[in-house]
Length: 200
Length: 186
Image (cartoon, rainbow over all chains, first blue to last red; front, side, top):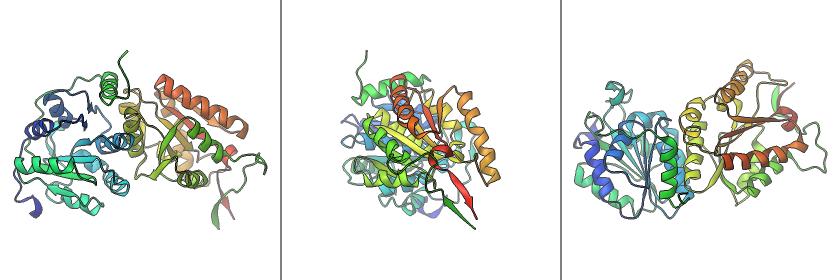
């Protein structure tokens, strides 16, 4: 733990994900990064506007950016783990340059690769996700101090005029559900949920 | 010694359209408007022309797989995209092809500027080039190597349409015979 996170509460991924979903009333798109991040998104209750990644570690923010660029009038939220984000830090600068108004990025930071055996990430204890994001050009980046602060930050991001990043310190618990691994159906139903296609 | 782009591809005459103007027009005709790229010397005139045309949203990404993620998201949101890269950039894509584009049936359109052949001066580029087609073939991905200006529009236009209608990725490899490539200049 480093100084900027010392006052933040350790929260639970499923709990904060459920709090996020409960606040969504406008068919916002939600992209769940690989592993526990999308398992908890799934467990929080499937929505037609949810997209679940089954691989391509680190691409939750780029995929969400693509959705945001395709549908500028829809709010897009991406959920990513700290280990996944470390795979693709350059994406933060791409998003900072393009400045989509409708993109909220949430980082679930437990400092470990929970799903592979809880090994510490190389960033654990030395790097600060919010400082990285700010340094990458995303000025609207903040640690959530506790659950109420998380909800407040989410609420603010949904009406913001620039991309927002919210970092959440979470515990080492695994996800509480398991996404059905059916990539074609996941993609097709997401496109229905976004109004791009109608079912046959 | 300097490294320069070969100015005029062999088969190009002053009255013929350039390869990059054909690519741009073909993208536009097929409503492919989102074009992230990792730059390449040979692609530079195409990248400049895309930036100059307000139809396109075009920008650099830090890695090729990031660009693949972006156009995949855009496709699901109803907007068509294509990724521009160099051979060595394609070599970073096996994971995202096998875990995102292919299993989710996303019509990922890739333009790859081919380094590593027909006068390559960097051994590493020559080696990485040899990995490209085996990776494409191992996933049974459609790919075409374009060598002739008079075939470019047909191959690009038909391949984009096939990718979209069959919901499958395609790689269009721009060979030095088409683009002039990048050569060692003494």
